[in-house]
Image (cartoon, rainbow, N blue to C red):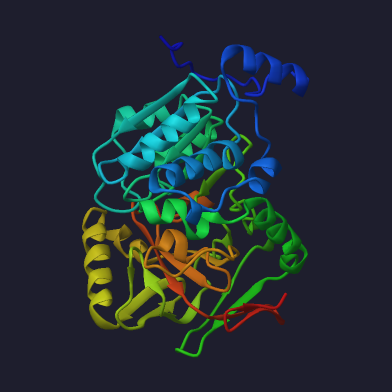
Length: 379
């Protein structure tokens, strides 16, 4: 029987330094495969097109476990899935079990919407881990459960809406080591820039302020340190707009949540809140989803569901526009805004819903510096 899961203290999950050659001999003696470093895993990937589905699932799961999460021998790992993602959960469990005997897979009921809290027993288990991977239908990224797990030292990867195709192709097939370097290279461009302006040929023209120190550069797919929270597939740079500062028009012409838009959706933003939504059947679904979320709040808090919570742009050259925001917002040259809960970034809109819409080919300025020109990175 595997050892019982234990609550972490303040000790380092890595323990004292171990000579890599000695560690390899110990692993071989105990039946574990030799560790694959992030760079090696990236450079020795087998093209997915050459594998059947089962082998492709296992190759991707192994990459997630070894390269992205850097799971170490004996670490506690919890995999949280639901009825829509059990095959992915099982593949991750099998791959992870080759590196640690402290791996738990749990299938929870499917949530109702993005940001919906997992059941209390699941949330409690998440807080007892060093690593959490959550391939679920709806995103757990902006939940209290994930924040608490991260605060307690876990490194967390959420994978909302992931399909088998997305798990084995597109953004998940990227070289995350290279993406990490590309994101780091843009850090100097972001430095000391305060005003963001976004425009597009479809009518986007919106301006807002940011604290340049708050740009998040950690969504690169390498989640190997405590308290990191990332999405997979990864590859974006993002920030919370200063509350109340955004004004203008945002035209969503790529995708909204888990669907390509049937026609562009126009969001009118005043003082950081969406005040009008127009455009096809998608606009109606947006109004309905946020209207229902507002009803669950106190009257004075209901307008906060319309907070523009996050802005970001994609950095993953393998990501595609497929009608799933998990991959769409990472596509190199795209940008996105998310509406709803911003407490993950220290904001005040604690509203229990957060959904993103993607702009396919925007132009983005930081102060007077053009960094993306109609979907092409120029900085």
